[in-house]
Length: 116
Image 1: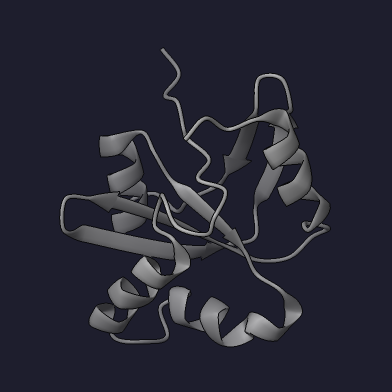
Image 2: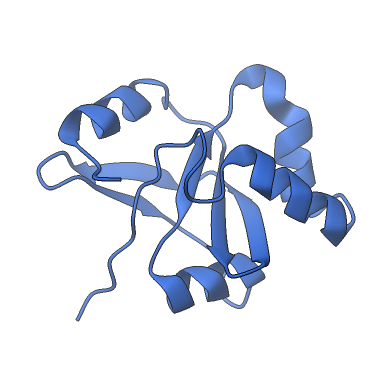
């Protein structure tokens, strides 16, 4: 899916300051993590930044694939935030990552390009 400026603009309207879930997938591995460092860098070209903790499974998958999905959470989704913050068994996190989009579902599917 091609990410457009309007898609980024629409997503960022929902982000004042808060919590998002970043998900990544490689084959049958799906992982996600809660982040609160997420920002729009540019609309043209569409660029965002999400800070991932080094050494996490999600960060590793993003490094390997160069792709991640972002799901911006609302105030009423604290349970999802808690789950992706590591407060649940890994198997549940994987199924929830799939439900949150994991790069292709209801999220905006923002791609990550590695810097040269």
